[in-house]
Length: 329
Image (cartoon, rainbow, N blue to C red; front, top):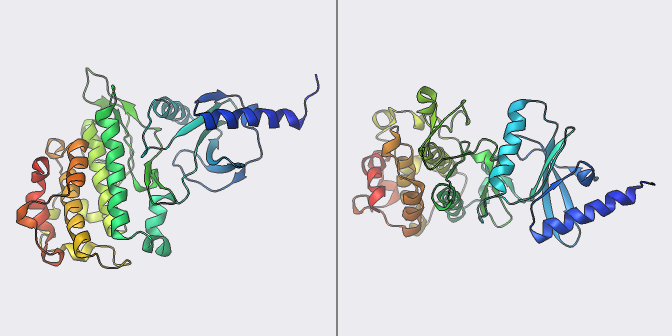
């Protein structure tokens, strides 16, 4: 009964084959005790490391010691959700390891990292021109449309934010980190649970009702969309009295000034994007559109006639006045 490092090599070969074949597999601690190199943190729950599968593909390995019950629960929640979802705009979970010493989730490596960092760092932000930013928002909308409307049992993510969205080398966006996600039973339209989400992105209603619905994800999506357009978190623009205090603000004045001004075609996309965004940020959940309506509006690319004017003439108040029309676009 001789055990050498070659046993680890063999186990890693099995992991590689399973990952390439697309079979989600539960692994032992030994299976993943391989010499991966550290690559910083990409997830809100666990630090990330990277392993290269030679001549095949690159994977992202998330792992950490879990001693807290909440983290343990979040780890298994993420496995439960990601083992059942398959969508081009949602990170793909290949394999996982659950052990008392450590736990690992093995994803595709999404090369450009989190959206938040790409918006914060000057040079990275300049690489995100207006067409790329519009496409990123649409990718996130498509992922949430899938989670809310295309599954037998809808899933609420509950923590949509810029640090839970990853960009690949072609600037395609992927929704990640499902540690707080919940399934909606067919007999229930909301979840009553402990407070979840991230300050600055979470909808206003859970703080008083402790109820989470798909409309909470819609609100968080609106915050992310605004952040993509502004290049930073919208901050005070999310306040309920915004339409009174900032009604004269011109749309052009809130755009990210670090990148080239949009073309006339891009201006129309930006106006539509912000129209959709303000609809998502309505204080009343019932006034917000569904993610199906959001995605369809962004796909149809049709603005109400009342705000079909040059971007430099559009006030934020115009978007507030007509954001309810998204349901009819």
